[in-house]
Image (tube, rainbow, N blue to C red; front, side):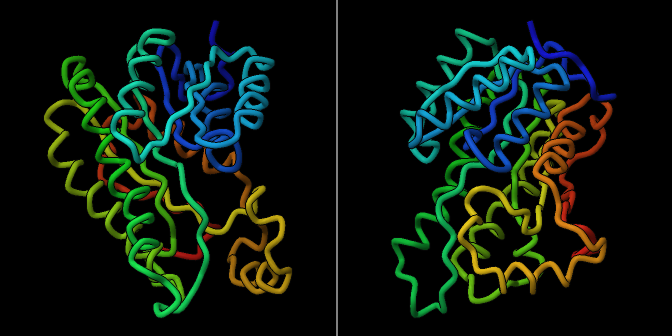
Length: 257
């Protein structure tokens, strides 16, 4: 039985896959989708213990959920994962592309092409591979939601961060093109662009950096991981069926367009 619906945007009967959902923004997004009634596929690549802990939390809330290990930059692993999801939870209606590698900031001389390629693999190759696997079913059902977690860094041109910013730009361009390609099938493609929302990966970040960023947030507070999750719930809902090719910035007003 799926979780109790506490969102006005009901996802009852839908199946949602959130990549990289064992921690951080991905975990919060999985929780929000589950609270809205979706069955949730938790994905992780490295830490089974964190994935199992997230699964236990979802089930404790009454969410119907399962866990699946896969490197979402690998086509064969994606195929195995989606086949397993279809067998246990049902066809995937919603995919939130969230998985990310480490994001060190360096001047361009400090990066090599292998690092650039890793960024492209996560933010361009992964959405492409997931879409290729999931779209036949979505097209047949004439319904689907592709939601890409992008970033404010593309719109702000943050430096020294060229590899990550370039890959997020590619992800954004891909999403905009796909929204036109898939609209005739009733499939929407949207983006969520978070600002810096501190999660587990930021625990060791310098306090001076956090203080400097905090001072630039117009709303005067840190964002919460679940605020990204609820944006995903809206984009996944039937109420957002006429919204496609758009970016919701969840950053307290740091970008306006």
